[in-house]
Length: 221
Image (cartoon, rainbow, N blue to C red; front, side, top):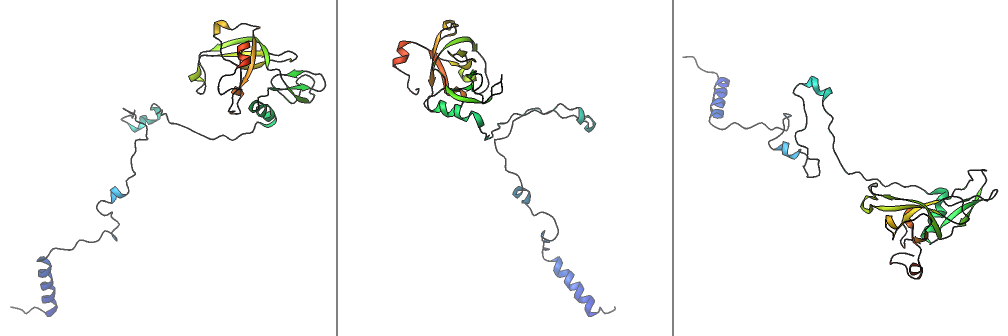
């Protein structure tokens, strides 16, 4: 029987020893494979803020994707819009202080209830003037549907107000009167909100009466 070399015996003994104990698992650090449970670590957290859609359309054949019905979702959208009132700034500053301002042309004396700094007839420059707080209804309408901001207030009345000595009309709300009670030519009185929002609705009108002259509702001037 031939004798085994020392090196062969050592290798054989090493194999026997390895067979008698559990083999070590290779580390995944250098192998490129993710360790167990790593998929949970990289999973994007879910929330209840998404859009819940049932039975999303998806064709069976990928060739039909171009003809798939578009997916439509609804989500809230908010933006802060910073803008300037420019040449109309004195008008809104006047409303905040209980003054209704218009403009009058220096050349032809044409007076605008809705202010503009250049006359549309002679292109002359205009000056700021204070309008009367009492006027008459030129025409009116009742709005039963409006934009998102005004929808909760529907129905509401809109009037075009004519002022003595003023050549154009002024659009505003009319409060304190039902549509059946509004008449062309009825006298109306301007009122201003106490906390101005720098919007055209900072001024509105009410039917003129002695009782309203003596007392104003809370929150109004």
